[in-house]
Length: 607
Image (cartoon, rainbow, N blue to C red; front, side, top):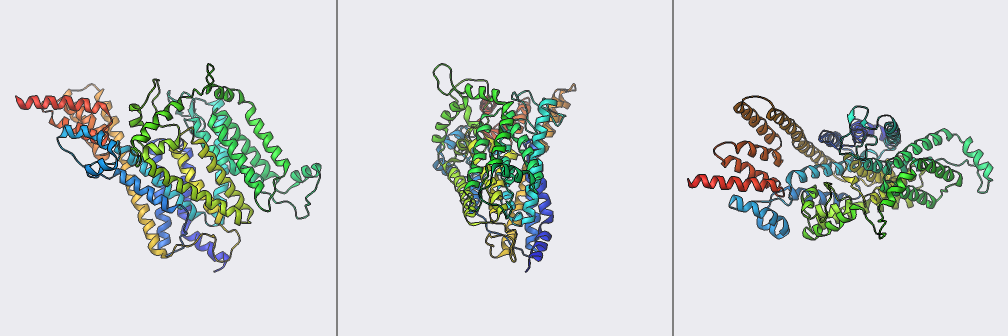
């Protein structure tokens, strides 16, 4: 099969899926960083649809599916997340995680018997987090499969550069023209005391996104071949002339301008972790490029990049310096950042849930009972992705994640030693540097829990594998990745898995969206002026609909319990309250109501 035929077959089997892939890649950061239910639902749905379209066209007729690194830890981690959501016999839960069993023990006293339990202290939170991470896993697989062809790889990189530069430009304009609105219409909530930046309400998460994509512009800035007549020893003046007379000087200047915008926006975020991480990522990029065989970094572009970095930092350096100084106590010189206190508290959480954690997404449910200091803040995350992975998923999830990331880094590094194609080497280098940068940033923040940033982390992992193996000049196969045997069977399995994810996302995320609409309507009715009987009947119907759409969320059971406790018979209210406790046993207000209702019910039965 010749080169053109391979490209034609690849295009025929992946055009629609590649379009959905690009839409997902662009939508995730632009949809306010994918922090809301509707945007997360959309991203997960687009990802699942991409998988369905790609693997269905692979199945009929069968096309190549490539074996990718890290698939085993991904499958095991998916199984672990599913296991946390599957109810197990209470004796087994007591054996696996005694502390989770103890949390549910009070529920057994209320209902008078034991029941099957999940390995999580908040069922809905773990279910939503499991779907989010599973969609990331699928996006990683899709990235490798779709970008195994060089044309798609280059198109994706170009779109990513334009997208990230546009977001940086938006962030800078927004900071000075419309600081209190995103896109000029979305109001920033009062709780966002740091102020929004670009599409993100949280500027730290904006900085995390830029940390991942900035190295790509940097390394492509150096992706210009020297003339064949070039000699090793030329004067500095000749280097300057060569730089500005190059046929690709316009491309370099545009990349330099875009990189300046992005670096300036990172410094404008005043994020300490962002500044440290981007400097680390850029230095690592230059270090890898410096040691690639057959490639040299010339001093003039490096000086030019340092000059751009200095310009980007100059106007924002003072507030960043103040933030760095604020982390050190002026009295005794010790670190005074609040994150450190949170991390110290988390040590006991890890000790209490060592193997399988308390359930993905449950940090905010458990941490208040471990908090050892007093302040006005509500900590939804540990501000350290590694610690939160240990508290939520335990040592097993931490080791599986480390296995996956290590396999990606090893795969990318091996290809850097073996390949000679400049474009593949440079894109692989940029992807590795972006991954390293966000991993450094994760020590002091929770960027990987942001919808868009988490997606882009797995996209970069896929880019490392695809760019490291994609062949730009080939005869038989467009990639060096090994082909999975039994193509039809595996294609159908991947298609089935994508379809299952699509159904699960539609039920859970779509149900959550519709249920919240019903609940909001019920709240409006509760404040309306109408007869109490009619108001109660309407609210009951709306809350029952909300509970039917989203049967995993405790809020609707609790709302129904509040409504039913007005009736003479309190047994229904007690039933709803016990159901709420079963779904979220760490909420103390549920127990308070249940104890009161149980006493009332018992007294009525005695009468």
